[in-house]
Amino acid sequence: MSTQIHPTAVVHPSAQLGDGVVIGPYCVVEEGVTIGDGTVLDAHVIIGKRTQLGCRNRLFPNCVIGKPPQILGANDQTPIGGLKIGDDNVIREFVTIHPSMHPDEQTIVGSSNLLMIGVHLGHDCVLEDKIVISNYTQVSGHCKIEMGAWLSGLVAIHQFCTVGKWCYAAGYTGINHDVPPFVIISGHYPHEVRALNKRGMARAGLNDEQKAALFEAFKFIWRSDKPVLEQVRLLAERDGLCEPVKAIVDSLLNSSRQRFGRYRELFRD
Image 1: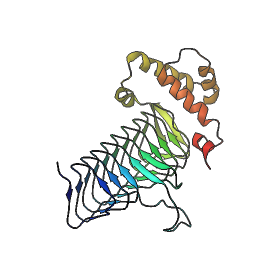
Image 2: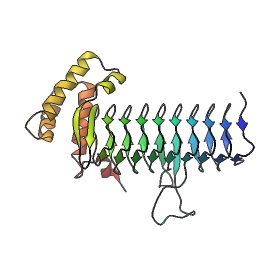
Image 3: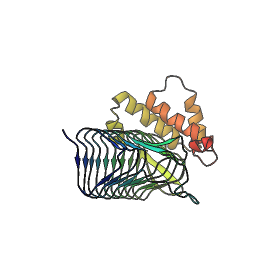
């Protein structure tokens, strides 16, 4: 299948385009960009320098992907890093994704993710796979969103937060500390854990035994009259925790190591 480039598109000679790539009207593909087989850029899509796009991605009109991060005092000569995006992602209208602020590092987006209209991903974020981020959710720099997380509309995430796998954040949630896996959260500053995410558990393919263990752990941690961290430490001492429960325990213990509950802050420059 041949590559198609609309006559109005501007594609830098150094860009590497795979088989079946479609570059639509008024798109701009800058220096050093790599675009994998079958990826489609609709009208007015801009791909910044050195961005790597995998295969079969679909980018809708007016996305701006890989342009310099929003850093106070930066200019066109400020060295920046890269952006790497996997396969089979759907990136809807007006999405912005920034590369790393560090010359030798990358912002990373995995595969099979859906980023809806107006989503922003700041520099140095890491997104895993099968994530859904709904309209106008704003993800600050240095955040990590794990496998299968689902963020509803207008969610805002503070820098350096980790959002656990297969969790769900309700609309308007303001996330300012780490979110454990498999839970439902809502509210803001601070958000609160409300329940277990049954749909996320199903999407993760958990068996009945794992689901039952999660419900038992949830009651032990969040439905006790004792402090959450105290309960988590007691749970951590038990032998034979299943992987989903251990993921929750590890997340809460890691978060507790940083005064604001943001584990990734421990590794900031």
